[in-house]
Length: 157
Image (cartoon, rainbow, N blue to C red):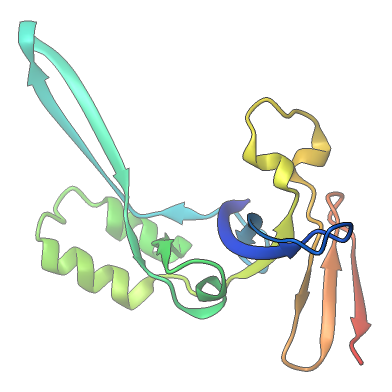
């Protein structure tokens, strides 16, 4: 489980040599592939006719760690041990919420290039979410994973 981000890149058309801009899709997740809890806010208000209207938002922060390679912002991901504190109805002070986020936010993430087919809601099938890239590591090893979650490790030259 994770989320997608897009990074603007330049591509060279092999037939014409023309350089064009494109958006490369990346899938970002926890290294252990657990589901991610994102910090968010919900509000309810009464509108005409005593109907309730709900709104919600996901909170973001400046990207740090590996996510910064893809996008300047990232959602605030909470570790399991901070979820209850975030959902505590007594947490009404914004500065306390910010302190909680800063103390606990998850930044140890990994990312992979994903198929650009994910960019269009008309596309269907398992190949839409297939990871097509690899994740280089500082040790010169490359970890490449496919949709069936099988991974290979190779040493870069």
